[in-house]
Amino acid sequence: MKRRSRKSSETVLYGLDPLIIRDPYEIVYRHSYAQDSPFFAGLTKGKLLGSHCPKCRVTYATPRSHCYRCGGATKWRAIPKQGTIHTYTTCYYGGEAFLDETPFILVLVAFEGVETLFLSRLIGARPEEVRIGMEVAARFSSTPSFRVTDVWFEPKARP
Amino acid sequence: MPSIKTDPRVYMIAGGITPFKKRYDDKDFRLMVKEAYDMALAEVPRLTPDRIDGAVGSYFSDHFTRQLKAASMVQDYLGLCPKPSKRIEGGGATGGLCFQSAWEAVASGRMSVCVAFGFETMSRVNTWKGNEFIALASDTNFDFPVGGFYTGYYAMMVRRHMHEFGTTAEQMALVSVKNHANALYNPFAQKPRRLTVQEVRSSLMVADPLTMLDICTMSDGAAVCILADEKSAERFGRDPIAITGVGSGSDTMRMADRPHGKVPLLPHERAADYRHLKYPGVHSFRGGRMAAKLAYEMAGITRPLEELDFIELHDAYTSSEIQTYEDLGLCKYGEGGKFVEDGHPFLSNVDYGLKLANPGTLPVNPSGGLLACGHPVGATGLMQAVFAYWQLQGSIKKHMKKETLQVWNAKRGLIHSHAGTGTYITVTVMEKP
Image (cartoon, rainbow over the protein chains, first blue to last red):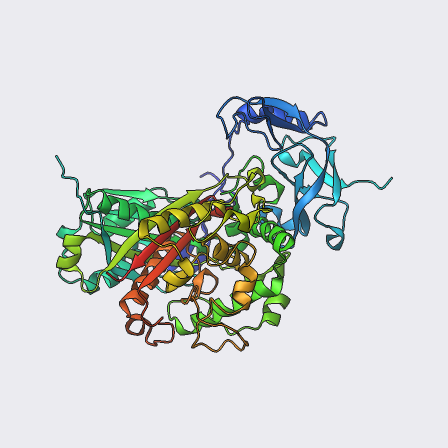
């Protein structure tokens, strides 16, 4: 008989009436960034790549390969690595995947000459120091994970 | 060939709900819907199952059910096979979209009687896993990995609202006080409570400025609405309520992508009202304004504050209730905080422990809303329809045992359902025929 190690397939009872069992679920996906891939590759080179529509003359901070105004293909365009905080919050709780990172500060960053915003984390500031309009600068991970968290923002160093 | 009807007027002829609870271990989603369905059917004894042409089912998350095609299992359990059926999913607006889909089935002439059923079983995972599931309804390349958490997104939205308009956290807390107190008189509500502004502000901070009491809870529950055309409503309905306005709208999946443009104006607004307002940005819900505009046009509403008698709206957050007052044109953009502070959306006959200047102008969420009734997502928009239906029938006392929440002489009500950061929004107007 095959020896069974205690693993997730083992039945755990939570209750008898009604009958409640533990039911784990784990999946690994093969996830392609597809047409957005250059953005994530750009982060590894310290670049923030947005999208520019030559026809509408609009630059999008978070990339989209087609313009939502005219439907035409956009071109990749580096956006500034410095911007200002459009809005922010400090999360003291979060989804289970992020609970051990709390508290963390979320910011939407606005850039000069760019129509849309960019969602990121703010690091290096205490919650009470954060302000709308505060100048922030992008920082990039030196050990990329090919996730959007390879970039984050910090308060712009005072001169 | 099926005939196309010239009169597309659709009626709600029956409704049923389960109480919303933290969890139902003794009933699965099929049985919860069955109970709501039987409650609805009990109201229309002449409507035998063979008179039902089909159904539309709604639940939000396959992650919560861990059962794909769960709506097929409900269709089966209710004994509605082999009639037409489909599942509707649209995030937080799932229930509202389901209601409108059933309306479409009847208005198009495809069905004479259509059942809309919805449910959610959120108790199957812990609250923080549940928050993670919900956050998977944000862009999983760009938004979720940063700290996927809807409360965080709404906190950022209202932070900007506060910045633009001077809205305060205390004004938001008033919404919590109101909705939790209304729910004291609603036996279907999950979390009735008497609260003070101070208690709301001093409860656990979740994502600044939203505290635990600014946010709705996870729930299990089900709701059912039966819609019918005029002929069937006359034949089977006892006290049918007409659906006179249907509108919906959408916005970009990522709130970071919301542009800055002009406010789509309602008939009672002028461009000059918003000369300096960059719209919607992240402070307002453009899809909500679109939904309201379309529903008002269909229902012939030009002055919503005067022409509506009550509203059940999607208050997943106290902040979104305030933002929604503005989208619906109950006040101008920027005046939502003052609107609640002045007392307008409170019931005039409930003691909230507050001094209010103008209570009862237009009661909003007399049921207690999502904040206090709970938010079993796929059922929520249908729950609103059931409460609105009872209000317009004048049958609140019959169903809730007390008549405290009955809005007297309610002739026209509005229900509003909303998905993550305003990506889908529905507005439906219901009237006494």
